[in-house]
Image (tube, rainbow, N blue to C red):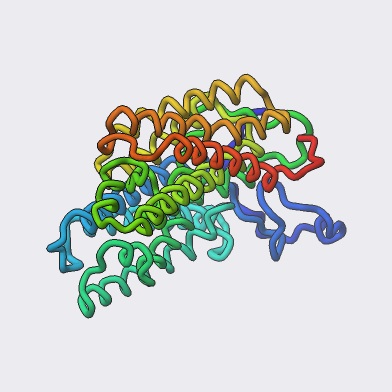
Length: 380
């Protein structure tokens, strides 16, 4: 089945006599709404434009996060990094506004002019704007946050929430375009058709990766000597244990985030080859831009390609779904430990029982997560 995009068509302003006689009739191309008027469906051009602007916005956020982490003297809201970040927001707002305006011009009322999946973006714009204004006031009154405080400050959490609603617009729109009446084979988009969906999921994943970066092995490699030696220097076994516990928690958290993005996509579509590789490589690449541990990017690429090969091999069965959920973290973190052992971050500091156990527990977590997405007893 192809992934179809249908252009917005204006609603008929005249009363629909047949619809009045048959209240159960649903309008084609959208959900049933008041007055017999449905929302239009976003087309491929709108999704592509939205994704490009969301990438701009996300790059601005990544650069701003890098500045917060690496420039201790940063003490003002008005920086080049904020300029890149907020100009990306302006571009996203322009795309949403122009899309609504075009639909109004062809006859849709203002309150129904946002395409399916894009109505939530309006809330995202308002939340982001409130967070941006609050962030500027916060910085001027209390200074610039540092370290973990910068990730979970109230104004930054507002910004993250708004961005997540914005970047997931193409994903929501595509999810609602899938023909729900189809039984049997999953929709099989090409990579070109699937790219906006995959990038939308990846950008949403990136929001959570940034919030949890203190527990990301790609940013804080607690298994490497660069961290372990620093904690051991205090000669307090409690700190050594704390570093190991944080490292294990990081593997589990990132496993849940990565599979939380991919498993729902696997259940909704037959993923084109390269989907896992693209999502893992882009997500890890953005994290590596903060930590400057770029050696982990090829690790993500190889693990993603191996998972793509496995997914193509095991097919669409529930058993294959669970195999992929178990194997992806097994491959990713196994290769990660190999890279660290070869010298990334100063070498592997964990003993074999600890690093091997961390890999296996992460794989088991992926398997358990698959039962949340596809419960026991499901046939498809």
